[in-house]
Image 1 (cartoon, one colour):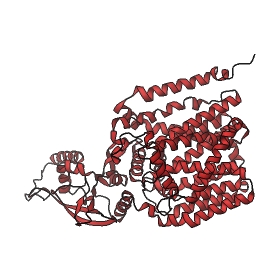
Image 2: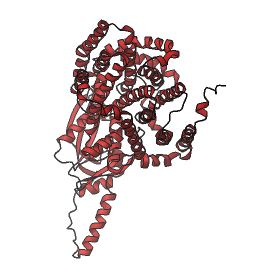
Image 3: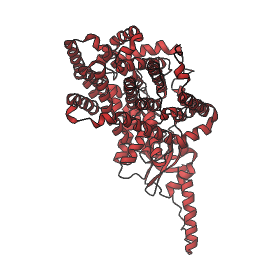
Image 4: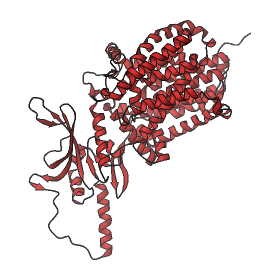
Length: 622
């Protein structure tokens, strides 16, 4: 008598250990710690959780690829494909200016990487000061953004020294990794030309260029999605513990790149179960058994959304009351259509990719419906792509149900990148159905024409980035930093994290108002070479009258002298001023005392006063 089909799963002791590990992770992540203690725990241990997962991932990659690497010879490489990838990466990098494109995300990620580098803690610095040439982070807050990107950036800081520009270096390296993987998956799905086609389709996408030259985590998200898919294909082909470990830990790290990337754990789990059922045995390694415990920090970090209602950024869209709802779907879908098929001069989209991708996707889905029962007869790459279609579809639907899910919005269009990856994979997956070499050459010609006629001109003009004022203001601030001969000044700016991440002493406007006495103390004691203020002024088109942006007004007690200003957008004036004096009505608080100071004669008394002064000095740092 044959055993029941799933008896091998029920009887495997390692699987029971995995279930126990998962249950413990759920208890620790969702029930054991609540509120502020959960955030403190992640702040102190989050770095070490990600480091452990990353080391185990690298070890798993070595174990599964070491035989391939030992037999690798330069003469066996496809140098034409290497040239296509290298040239494609260069095209994407040279037509955009390196800089922080989506300010809140990218600056917060940089700040978190700074604390990971200096202190190995997860903290976004909110107060920091240059103290006698040494920059010290004095205070910060736990950010809501996942940890893998700032972790990798902190490793780059560890290797090369802390520089804000390391964020651009990291993404500049990742673009070549991504295009190389696109070429590889295309080759696995439909041959050599398909790899080139995939690369060309992405090279013609200005949105990818914008993110490759920025400081955000979108490109890493694409890299990890594709890496997890390819390692899933390898696990389907090899069905051993080493490839399983690499596959599962790629998925674990993918979860910690973007919030919604948790959805891709579904295809990871489906592939593992599918292989087990096909093999009629459980393939499980010890690192994977305890992997759920390395995800504990993820739900704990999400307690931020419970503690801070502002974390959802609902105030950016006052008409909406809930972050996710099916009611948003149709409206967001129309905005998505406007984005995918927009004039590339107005949006960083690609008509070539959009047309080919949205034509191919229905055929791909129909082909999947026909092949779902015979999926084991298909190639591992096709099977992995089929399973990951579940993740891509879930991510797209979630974005369409998101209150701020309008793909044609300057802040949100980057969230379309996983959908673009899905479209490219759909084109490559259906390509074998059109096996004609002539047809494939025609598609390559169309993709190349799209790069030359649309992609490159759009990237060169980058008109689509001019409407996002915070990004332009950030570039303007960074130019101000570069122009200063010394860094020992204080900047009063509500976006204080930007300055602190560049190792400039900074404090927000509300702190400057609240702690005016402390600012006066440091002004009188010449702690800083200068005290500057960043402000934005809105211009009335009828009267020409200028009013300060809400939250930028320091009041009449701060006497300011403009030192630099520029109109970066119509009807706005961006200004940096120097604080000349701080007053209390008619009385100047920063004027030096006229009386002669009394200097003690005793060395002990002088030392005592010096220590008391230094203690007071640190307490009163803004």
